[in-house]
Structures are given as C-alpha cells and as structure tokens.
Image 1: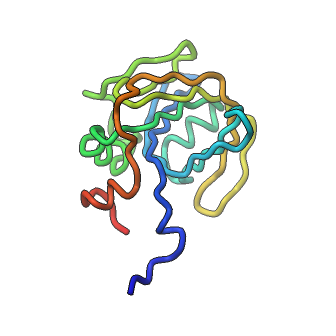
Image 2 (image 1 turned 120 degrees about the horizontal axis):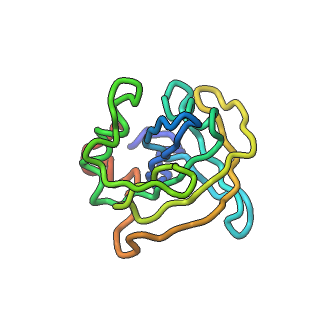
Amino acid sequence: MSRKTVLKYKNYDVHSITSVSPSGKVNANIATWVMQSAMQGKYLTVALYKTDYTIQLVRESMILNVNLLAQDQAKKLIPKLGRKSGLTSNKFVNLPFEVDERGCPFLTEAIGYIQCKCVGSIDSGDHELFVCEVIKQVTLNPDKEVLTNNYLRENGLVRG
C-alpha cells in the first residue's frame, strides 16, 4: 500500500517563470505552484523558492511571465532551468525565447505565457507567494500537450 501524502496525488502543471531586473538581468526557473486566484483569470498566485535567483529579479522589477510548458520541452528544460543556477550560468543560451514589450523574456516553444505584474507577496516558509495581476495571456503552441508533475515522475525527470 502506498504511503505517499495526499498532496503527492495532485498533478500540478509545470511552468517556467521568466523575469528581468531593471538593469536587464534575466533568468528562468521551473515552478509548479502557480494558480489562478481570482475569477476570470485576473490574478495568479506564484510560489517562488526563496533561494532561487529568479525571486531576486522578481523582487527588483515586480514583473514576470508564467510560461506553461509542454511535454516536448521536459528533457531539455528540467535540467537546464530546474537544476542550474542563473547566478552561475546563462540559462538562455540555446533556449528559444523572445522578450515582450517590457523586456521580460518568454519561451517561444511553450504552450503560451501569461504576462504578470506583481502586486504583493507573502512569506510561505521556504517559498514566497507573489500575487500577480494578469496583464495579458498569449497562446503560442495550442496543439502541444501540457507538461505535468506526473509526466516528470513517470519519465524519471523528478523524484517523489
């Protein structure tokens, strides 16, 4: 009989949070804890790990893009964006991306991205929750399959 906790049964979508600092530094990470937090998609709440470089850029600029990742991106992006630090490597080398009108990167091979402006944050233990106003949503690759935690587990790309 399985002894996993109830939350391990949840099948979260996998995202990359991309951000830019006012000085033009960019970074991207992997995030699964992103949720709509208001009716009609007007706000999202994004949980960022406190030791991640991306959170520093988000705190400085208060802008980010939430990129909904596709299954075909998993093998390339999980090691690159989820297991390396943007402090010691440029994660955008050989990564297809463009920048929006704010200079914030988005991943062109993602299913799409949500352009956000952070309006507040709250401490959440080892993460910080950012409440974000949705500025716009852009669908880039509607025919791709959404990358989920279950897909990552089933393909040995994450533990647990």
